[in-house]
Length: 212
Image (cartoon, rainbow, N blue to C red; front, side, top):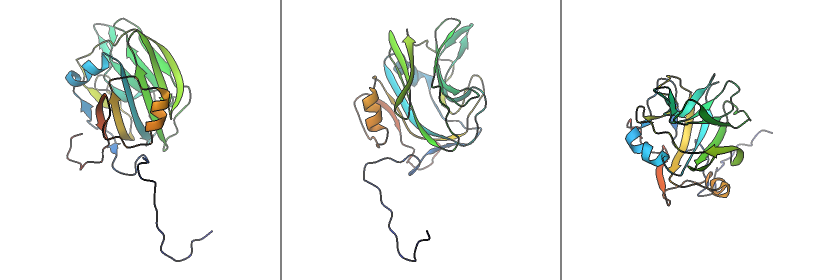
């Protein structure tokens, strides 16, 4: 039906986050958005939760990284990545300090042009868990983080392997504790300004001055 000529008011409930409504990080190719390894390594060595919203702007291809600092050092797998196989699902891949990688996969594919919330929890000596839009998609055993100070932690690309993905990201957060599924669901649609063990909180709402 056509709208009649009038003045219309749009509103939303205060405190409810809609991805991309304010500022967001646009990764359009050749991007350089990264956290120094010296800052991220101590966090990844213990319990952590990493979460963010992402909207793919084009088909990412095969094993395109959403985030990454992974690679082999002297033939041994190190670091961590969230990457997308050619079926557009999401894999959380951790180095083991040996030859193999420790990987779990979401199973379901992300749809290009739609917002999705991704969360990973990792607890040494226990489990890694992968959530998509608040649903637990997979989990696996996890011994320890294999440290990697060679490459910084990059958003939308792999500094080591050179691959990248084009997307828009929002509300990128890293916590130094394991969030429960209930906590992830409760906060994924909220704007967070502070919190216990909230180490990184990128809302991308600041002026674009070239820094996160």
